Amino acid sequence: MALGSLNDLYRDKVILDHCRNPRNSAVLDLPDVSCEAINPFCGDEIRFQINLDDSNRVREVGFQGEGCAINQAAGSIVSEALNGLTLTDVLELSKKFSRIMEASLPKDVVVADKEAINLGELSALYKVREFPVRVKCALLVWSALDSGISTLA
Ligand SMILES: [Zn+2]
Image (tube, rainbow, N blue to C red; front, side, top):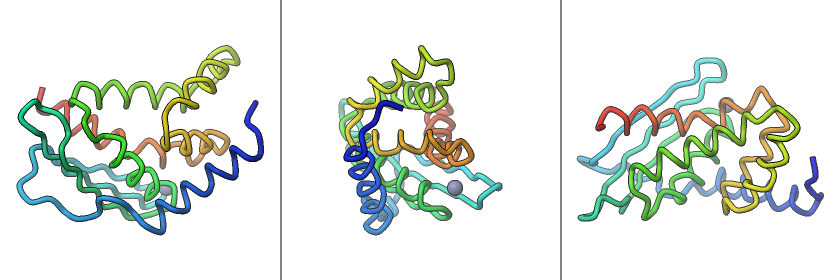
């Protein structure tokens, strides 16, 4: 991978910070969207609530996670990344993130490395790619969102 050690350090710090101080952890009452997902292999659970504004953009997010550090950090980071997005945007971001996390052909990895740089704090999760058994932990939050949002379509 073409990532420098300073980047790695920053990324680790982001993940640690979100684990220790999860954002948006309050449960929302009567949310517009509610969803959850479970990964039985490492006991990860994630629950999301989303409220939309008048123009159908994400106004408020609640997230509660249990399980490993990657799952917790992913939930917290994603809960912040959703602000202001439409549900269609959320599904697109989910697709993009899954694609770069699962890129395996060398030419796809080159593209993924570039795309990851522009994902803000989400790029911290890209580091999880180096640990294939944990990729599912970083993607659980997206499978929750995918299932919750597609039931509305
Ligand atoms: Zn996990």
